[in-house]
Image (cartoon, rainbow, N blue to C red; front, side):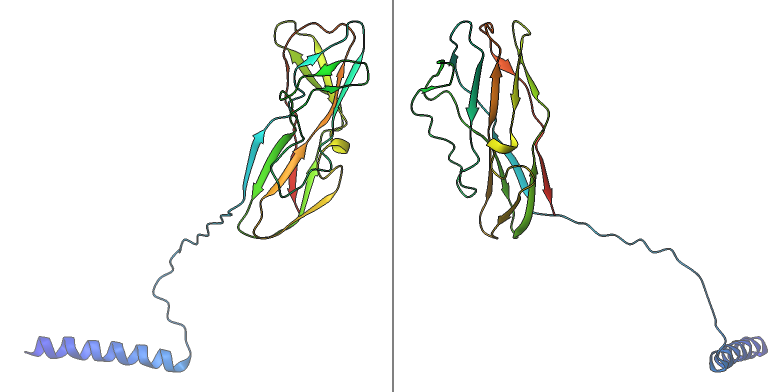
Length: 193
């Protein structure tokens, strides 16, 4: 029995000392712990390249240097419809572009929140299109002036609508370019300011 009394007395004295320390303002620290902190950021912003720029099937007049301009700068930012491609068009050098073979490029930007300041940056330098069989080169230039938003323009989008960025440019065709399908890519940057 004495042993139990002594143990109980020791616990009582220990508790009294801790209580006295707490009352005296002394800090009692049992252990330190590292606690993980986490945050997940998501956005409901979805950018989709709906279609590339297609200058169409061009019946080139032999010996002529040709430019084909596709102007998408005035197309609606809330409609996905491109330029009217239902008829053939004649370009300055007399070459023709076949109906239904051409259309503006299109990127859609959908968000569940309002996008107040969106800037589209188009390439300034000429971009190469390379013939798949011949390796010959055509260039596309002047994208900013022929695309929706233009160079350095800030765009606005309401909270419930999808923003449509229509793209065009000027295709430069050297005289006597051989029959081929010319392809390439251009980098368009969308900044959210």
